[in-house]
Length: 461
Picture 1 (cartoon, rainbow, N blue to C red):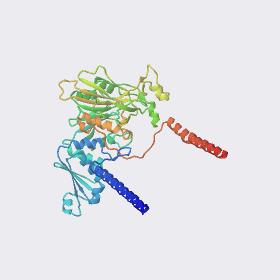
Picture 2 (picture 1 turned 120 degrees about the vertical axis):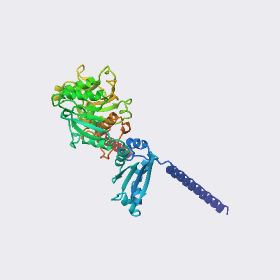
Picture 3 (picture 1 turned 60 degrees about the horizontal axis):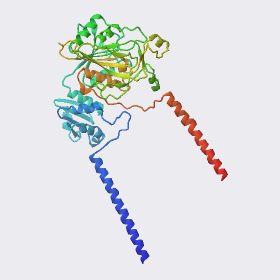
Picture 4 (picture 1 turned 90 degrees about the horizontal axis):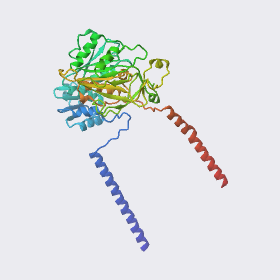
């Protein structure tokens, strides 16, 4: 009897322990689930942070001055499909108001709103309304920008000196810059400087991308007059590698504005580790004291870059600052003949040692009577912003942020949404050799040696 009683007590004890542990586990699961509901956290492991809202979206939403109403036309499944996007906008601003309308249940309302298909998002901000049929962060944020802009600023691209067109969708064109500006609700147009007596009055800022022909004296005077009056400009030149350098006039003009645009070409051996030519230097350091470069952590790639320096002292009334610098291993190759021969090497005393500046910023008033300060950004490369290279690193963000800064539209200075792309691994030659020896030679030899040792020891047993 005592034996049975002991067994019963032991079974009861085990049962109570099991029940207690089950309750503890359920309690822990319940607490964790409650905490997850109250304080949800997400981990975005995609390379381009596709599921994390961009800095641009955050700035736009925090800049709302009144309620933004978002009406999604669709059923319950539609709401669940776009819940992550909608929830992210809700978190960014309490001025974002969301409503779901099922066209099948409220056909009159859908017809009145002009809805032609399910999964349509209608944004209303004050008196302005916009429809979005492809609901992504990029599309929604761009439409919000357009709704919140009171006036449309105009960026005028100068032509007539061999500049590639801002409407050209080819590799060398700048259609990607045009699209980026239009997405931010700027207007973009081209004009020929030689056909104008002055910069058109509707131009809020001007852009010059990669001229390879000389500017006439009268054109230089028009540019000078424009900047003296408080004009805004982004000017991007590049090294003359395969042609005669025709930039004497524009370089002299920039020198008067505190920018020493040198000849030569920046060479960066670090670029070869990424599988690109040394004539495409990597810019890794940005001026955190300047609005454009503040918190800018992306690498930029500037093909055929001239070294850019600052005139010291700066012209009276102006403040000049560097914006982007190369790696210390880069240098400014001043012997263009050696480049043509393919025999490039750093020559002490002739070439310019790195790190080198590839972009500078100028602010201030040369004319104290000017109504506003001049804002000027100068790049030593023009190709970094074209359709081919603007896709890489932070190139697109840098050119668009620079233009936004000249327009005094700091709210648009941000890191924009990134597109998904195929994953790839970039290895230097040394890394490839190390991986080969480790994976193909060393590890197999170690395994073979270990197998021989085990075989010999077992033979002795």
